[in-house]
Amino acid sequence: MTSGQRVMLITGHSRGGGIANLLGAYYEKDPNFTSFTYTFAGASSTTDSNAENYKTIFNIVNEDDIIPYLPLSTWGFKKYGIVKSISVQDHYENKWGKAQKGTWEWLTGDDYNNDRGTQRTLNTFKKIASNRNELYILDSSSDGKVWENNLGHTTYAGAERELQKLTDTLKNEKLLRFCKLSIVGGGFLQPYHVEINYCPAYFMQMLANMASDPTVGPMTGHDVKGKYAKAKASFIASSGAVVIGGMTHPHLTITYYLIVYNNFIDRV
Image (tube, rainbow, N blue to C red; front, side):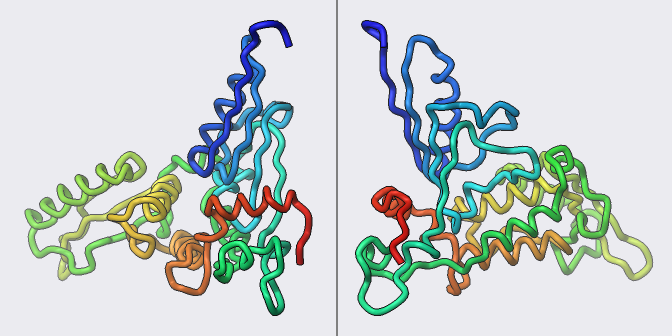
């Protein structure tokens, strides 16, 4: 290290982990800094084919946590640097009797909340799109079109009012650019209704809203059909919103503290 050279430590969790990953890649190339980056639970942040060759970036992943596996590697996404992962469920959840030192129950006093659904949900996402380009193409199949208002409208004017209201809602939720709205119907004994034709990115942004926006909520979002509905149901089950276990504990900062405390050494 030359005299006066600056040393930088970069770290972050979840969204902060994704940002830290990008900053780490930037500063590793900067000759004015010696940087070391440690990310926790960060989403994949790049499609750079050279990403694994970064030497000063270390990414810690709980294998029970779905967030670090998004966007999917099959869509070409990855993390800069070295990834080290372990399952808290398999290695740090107390199995018998009193909470063993180094386990989740020992640290928190609560039972670990996880439905083992990470891979199940990721598999449903793989059926949504096979590559990142497909994410932004409107789905022309019946799965990609939904009639959100089940009642419809007897007049075209009523459908126009719904169209405007839905347009405002989807714009506010950052969904409008990923779909096309149109008024259909109006034939014999068929009410007018507003149809949403969406692409896979619409669905993924909706899930992001469900996970992070309290006004949307983990059990709501917008109507979807077919393979999207199956993926949404799996995501909700993984979220823990239906009580049976989910992603809440796997993604918490304290979970990643537990991994660091144990230094990837098996405890159970």
